[in-house]
Length: 99
Image 1 (spheres, one colour):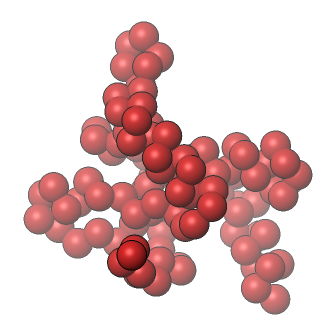
Image 2 (image 1 turned 90 degrees about the horizontal axis):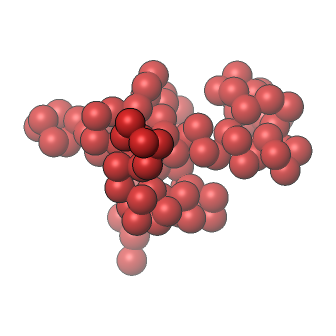
Image 3 (image 1 turned 120 degrees about the horizontal axis):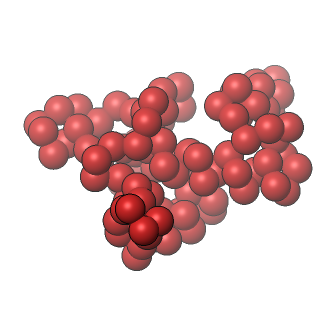
């Protein structure tokens, strides 16, 4: 059973955190490919990913993961759901869907 948190309206991190599983090393390899793959599957079928980096520093989690959102933007653009792979296109489509 998943813990359900309403993340509607949460901002997306401006950049990838140092602990982001989507961050790449100098050879272009993801820092945590197994975790990144798990998050990819989940953010296409269930929900956007909460950024957990703040929790590592005892802070509140109140943003979405930039790495996961960038992946969502690219996929949704490729399948034609978004005009461009940008946060602005995401917001525009969200408003259309909710209208």
